[in-house]
Image 1: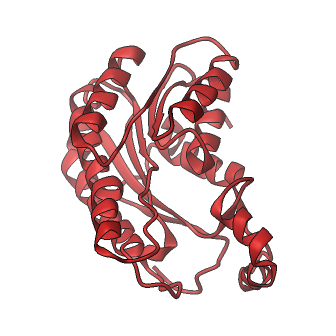
Image 2: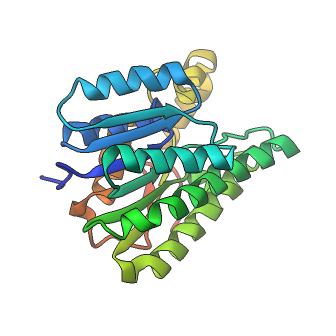
Image 3: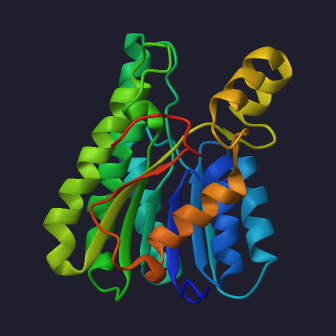
Length: 253
């Protein structure tokens, strides 16, 4: 399937590794022009070089602390200038609070929620100029299911789901779509589940058994879902919460 990404301009917050990187890599293969940010400058530069080697068209990257509002807005503003516009905005970054202390709640609020809000507000004027504008917020199934640890992570992802719907309802008349995608457990080299697989193999196997498909998802699989929803091929998907967990959570949305 041609997703219509050739020449499209995509900004990905949290794109140097993990699901964000797999998404950037796939979209670049499909001909998109890409801008990414992450906290680590070295990782961003390495990712940019790999993306640039894949083809023509601009690639922009910058280290950015998404807890800082001005840095977030400056990244989006400069990414739009470097790409010459924006068609696709993907917020994939997270504070990954697993402790539930006050610092974790503050980090989740700033990174998971406010970085997305700031990026969207900065990008709206340019998105209005696109003929295929979309906003995609990457959440988590922790937004609807308690996985055994009390923290700010699930509540922050739940707020993103509500925010995606508000964006879709309010910006739809401007031809800007908005959706939320909630992954379940996803394994990729160097990720949190890769670490659990090495350190807690019995626990990892128990998670595999809990998923009807008998395994965790992969970065490539999530990237295909995200790219489709965000792309012109997913044009009629709007105001949706899309579960991408292989059936891990046995519940009806």
